[in-house]
Length: 432
Ligand SMILES: Cc1cc2nc3c(=O)[nH]c(=O)nc-3n(C[C@H](O)[C@H](O)[C@H](O)COP(=O)(O)OP(=O)(O)OC[C@H]3O[C@@H](n4cnc5c(N)ncnc54)[C@H](O)[C@@H]3O)c2cc1C
Image (cartoon, rainbow, N blue to C red; front, side, top):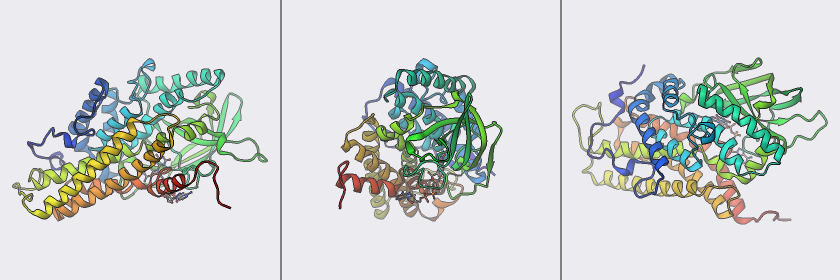
């Protein structure tokens, strides 16, 4: 059953519109387009998504209505280049929109990551990579087809990479295999945690080119290919009843000799491997969702302690207690630290970043993912028992925030792993 909309929202508050609760805080220079897109995401989030979030979570249902709204407001083409009819958002602009959506519905923002990055990677990211003239021409023709579906038909793309092996961590070749056949590819394999399963029209998956039984399997032969959801041989199995991010509906995807035409390729052969090596920020795109959750938990706690949360009977203020003020101060510092890293790292994202930027990207991913959960933990502790009732959004934010540091390839553990190693070793260095 859906929670009544009014229970999930705050009462009218003098703090409505306070820049502390916006993704950029105050004073960050935005382009006209960035401001327009943030306003659009705010409008959708506040007026549509917030009220639906509890039901989506409780029923572990994909947010179809939110996607219908995003289609209507032309947000599905956020990262489709303008010359292909989209809004032409770059990585930073995507991050601002994603974080704004994340304040209102984590599952919508997280699945929107998979969809939007299916345009971003073959778009501005691929534009900065080296391709031969033939590869560039092939890529232009293929991506035009993908973009047309998104812009004209509202097609939704997923990004199922995980297989339950070391592949999703970027440490081994993908086990899903694609064999070249006349006019296309035959794909077989299994993807776990395939968010948008049953909802996406296309699954943009990573697989390895099958070069024959005797050939060595190599990550260099990774292929990025979109499989239509209705292609013969595609099936979805297993259930989905997780702790948090329940509306992502991330069930298991099976491909059994699925034929796709050559035009299904989202990047030419060899280009995904190049992108993974040269565009590290491509793996940070999940974290804006959790930046949004961090802000939402802070905003909830401030308004709760001021007695401005709806659905709790007559307003009771709790802000006068020194311990509450200290915890809000800790949360405020956490928010400022997290947002400062978010803004700096995403705004500097580029191909071939210098080492300092690459290390900062790992540190930012780690910080956002860990702090989102810490912010929710502090919010529940200081607001108290009533704040974790399911009629209020905080307990959902807490559960959703727990998943952030588990997302491959840049889990919190793997970020530590990379920072530690790359801070101590230069490329090529080893110990005897
Ligand atoms: C809500 C949700 C939605 C998701 N949606 C998608 C999706 O749409 N597409 C997708 O591809 N995946 C998705 N994932 C999957 C996610 O990225 C992981 O693959 C998933 O959590 C499964 O991880 P695992 O338990 O198999 O990890 P394991 O591979 O067992 O790793 C467990 C932990 O060990 C550490 N670890 C792993 N490998 C190494 C290594 N080589 N060296 C050192 N440490 C290592 C990591 O910290 C990792 O968290 C989603 C996950 C969640 C929770």
